[in-house]
Length: 248
Image (cartoon, rainbow, N blue to C red; front, side, top):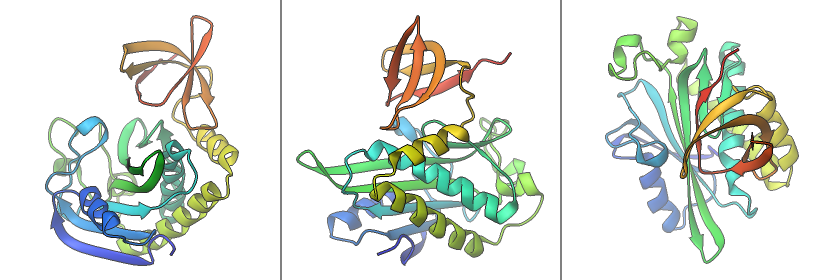
């Protein structure tokens, strides 16, 4: 079943990812989608909260059942799909901040949270969570993120037709997920790299399990890991975040 062919649209829930996970455990088909008008306990990476203002954004979770092992590419392909849908909708080319953020002029527009359940060593399902700021005005964001967040409305100064946008998103997600299922990892990686907020060769600082690490960005490997050159040695990171990209 294609992504978006079956949608459960609800008014409110703690987390669409949690609800989708329950449905996946109960045998829901791949491509099933949960959308909420608001989340009361939305979350992002590393357990952070995701601000989910009522009817201001998209809070979406998609059930996937990938046969491919390299599930670390799923956030990357989702970012590419969102970028494509946004361009088709409003003609703006947003950037992708590895591994899971959409940014516009250095402000956060959206985020992706992929959570996977395993049977033994094999992925049983992946829940692709998407949070996208749609119709927020500046005053709709809490004070602590107001300066660093944006929305499609703030970018375009216009209201966004949400259902039209969703149609474009399902089309883009099915395209990029189809490439993933066919093993086209090289195309996903190169496309993400081309649209990255971090230019190749830039010095950046990562937050890792080892603490903060600085090095030179050398690209994305075929499994979706960030390649950083540190004192002449190239290392790949999967569980890390870009804290800062050094300006000239």
